Picture 1 (tube, rainbow, N blue to C red):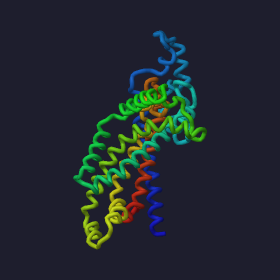
Picture 2 (cartoon, helix red, strand yellow):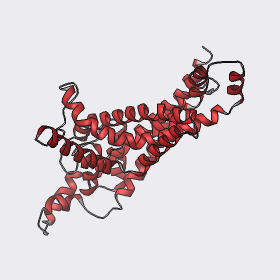
Picture 3 (cartoon, rainbow, N blue to C red):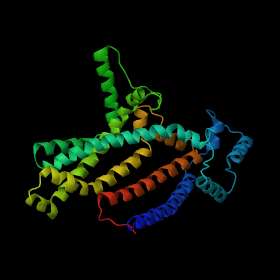
Picture 4 (cartoon, one colour):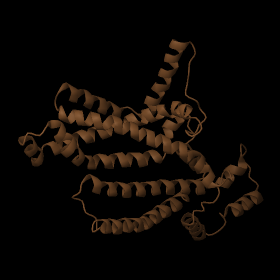
Length: 329
């Protein structure tokens, strides 16, 4: 009971600290967007031509609320964010919640799948590399991880698509590519996996390389600790020492890296989405910036900021389970 109360107070304190963090992000994105050249109304009304009717331009400003003072626009934006009313897209006129909701599920699934791929690759390889330090196994794993860091995920994605086309042409006589239109896993799990496993592998390998090197270096540091030498002197099996004592204590920096990677993935994989023709948050982000869609860009930035602060809070709480010595107050 004594430990649960400080943890409860810590969580409440961190949640309250989220508010100034999100407010700072809101101020930054709102005022920086106003400095970007371009005008959403001119883009909407001009089309392929150059002339824009001044009366239509004034009406567009009034419709989008851009004729109001900047401070009034900012107050409206902040009020809408804290009341979960993000408004409408300045470019499409659709509700922002609808536009983001159509793409959020896809981006979330790719981020989760890529993170799972990263963990499944990084933890075993990093552990084996640390245990077999300076052997041929260690050199192979280190080469594998360096290659993952050096190779861009979009290039690996292109190679995967080319490999699928060439191999299916050779085996079945007809080239095959993953389906383009997103299918929810609740509708057709097989079609969903066939479409998203490839971008998840391309992205997951890149982040697995970073996590593998972190796992290796962290575990090597723990294996040199006095309590590990004491456990070996007592005759404990190496497997028990690694699994029960060393690996858990080496996970703190690894968990941090994996959590940050997941948050970055939720921010949108712009180039990877283009390669695999996925209509996710990254593509929406690019389109909103290109169209000077202030409201959509602001909503996406705040969504990413919220994901980051929640991820950091979750990781901090998870630390207490990994290392009982950590106390929150």
